[in-house]
Image 1: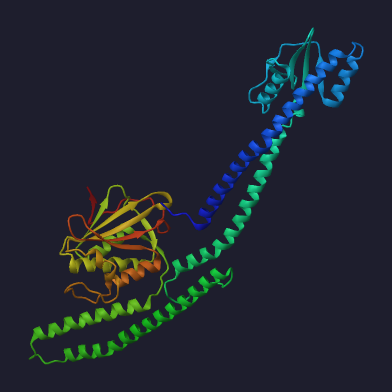
Image 2 (image 1 turned 180 degrees about the vertical axis):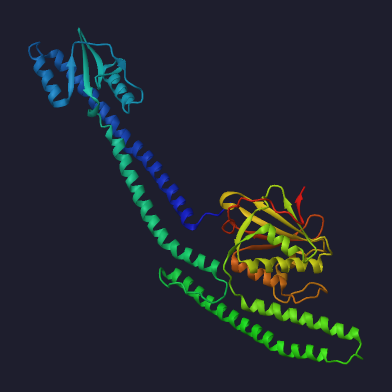
Length: 445
């Protein structure tokens, strides 16, 4: 699972914090502000209805119409003796329970709230008279909750946006440093990061720029030293070969062959040292995986194992020469230490954004101890009494780091070493239509 970025994590945390603030604030406002306001309104409304009913009953019949008009104009309350049977008020009304309780306490009898014509109605018995009161829903202070919601949402939004801007300003330099660290390989072309921002970030960026400059200078000196030594050794090596050719026939042929093998190993060491020192980056090109593997394994007495779930027309976009050199070095390492039975296995992992292709070079040798698997990638490191330049796996690691490939040494099931090269989704391209390749390629059963 891909790890979330600092910006995403912080924004999620701020979002959850803002949501928690909204919930806690709403609960507090409802219990401490909104509900007390509703209870007070319910008591006032019940008292007003009780007082209105008593006043209406005590007035002479001729004055009652004027009183009703005054109530409608000033208090938005309708009083009528024309009692109608209406539907009970919906239970989801905000203050229904409060108003109904207040009226029942005031009138000393249970009452039922009803709704009709977008008004709330209640029937009140006053001696010989039965009155019905109606009042508009807007007379209830029901907009308090909505106002509270809007205010709290605005506060949470302001807090979140302010925090988002601050975190983004902090996270952006960190992202730049992270990308620079990922891309930095100690070679030329490094551009120092701009030294700006808060004091802590400024110190981090400045330290990274100094470290990168020192590492680049160190690697440049190392490369120049390796290149100089390798180049200077070519001349005496050539002279030795010439002298070997000019030796008389009386010299033992076995001795001459031994000298030739030693010089061949020296030449191999010089070639690897030069390749390690150059570190020249190559442009990516499109290659056919099956065809490339078939061409390489022929020189190493190996075979390609192609599982049924992978199309043999698979193509990738990689640095062609570097890709071939990595596979050749791994195959050469397997031939020297693997004891035969070398196989190259192609596998596909994941899907979508996480899709990748793995190329496994497997042998049946003694394997590499887990504690030595990182050390063997260092220059001139050789395990046991193995012979060679000690630069083969170092070149593999250098090329893989340069082009963003992953390399790992694993245990092969049944014994041996499994050297795995993983190509990411950026290296994969669509499969062209065409016929399936054939050759010394076998399908995994």
